Amino acid sequence: MYRLALFGDLHLEKVSEIPGVVEAVEQVFGDGADHVAFAGDIVDAAQTEVVASLVNRLRRLGLGPTKVSLVPGNHDTFALSEPLTAEKLWRAAVARDSQRNYEQFCQLVAPLVAEAPGELLLPPATFPFGKRLSRHVALVGLDTVRGGTRLPTEWATGQLDEEAADAMKEYFDQHADAVHGVVLMHHSPLDDVPPVEGIELRFADPSPDIVRNWLAWAGVTLVLCGHSHEQRVVRCEEGFAVVEHESMSDDPPYRIVELGPRGGVNTRR
Ligand SMILES: [Fe+2]
Image 1: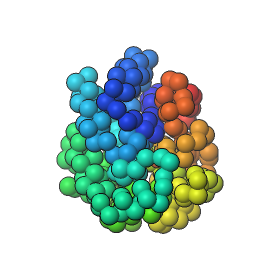
Image 2 (image 1 turned 135 degrees about the horizontal axis):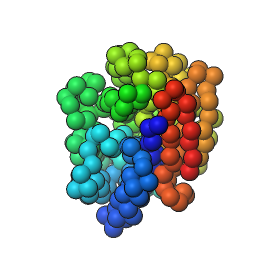
Image 3 (image 1 turned 30 degrees about the vertical axis):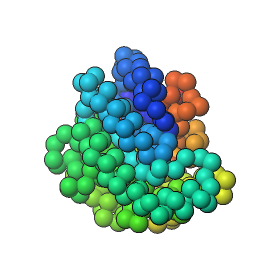
Image 4 (image 1 turned 90 degrees about the horizontal axis):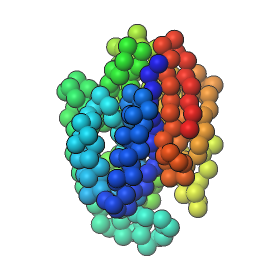
């Protein structure tokens, strides 16, 4: 049995909040977890100093890529906080700092993402990465935050590049002997993620149904994500399960996902 602890959407704002997260991580490992996965939105408004501090604290605990995985969320990239206003979106568009925030985020988390150069599926990019966690579990981490343009007007929708999808499939093909093909990504591939205050949260490029088809084609058995601020487990007709988790309203802030040696999945809060 391989045990993953899924943390989603911590939305940290200050360095002073980090000890609570570190305590939860220590607790989860103390309780027998094998791996901790952060599904993005670690911070609320691209506070890179908070990301840096969290990475340092986890590294000081001796945790590295075999124990921790992490992908970016829109809040890690855009210096926007809620409630969103047209003025904030306009300012973010003018400042054009989301690309710089994104690059800083990738640089800061790189030591936690991949150990061997071969774990970067499209080097030198930090994402996507692929890791063999155990005999039964292979994990791919995808960046689904709006690539390239990183337009504030589309700041919360999801994007998955075809190149990343191809790299994911190639990785899972190489690890076809793993019964669990797990994907960690910020955005949910489901259709029924409701907008928040009129802001669309679903995949926009491509559409959610195409993303699900790509995931099924790549041999994915389980998707771990956040972003929707839902707490649910859904089995898609495409054949894989989706676990959506957000940590802010949950105590303890993680969900345990148990992966059995014969392909069974059990999850509990
Ligand atoms: Fe998000």
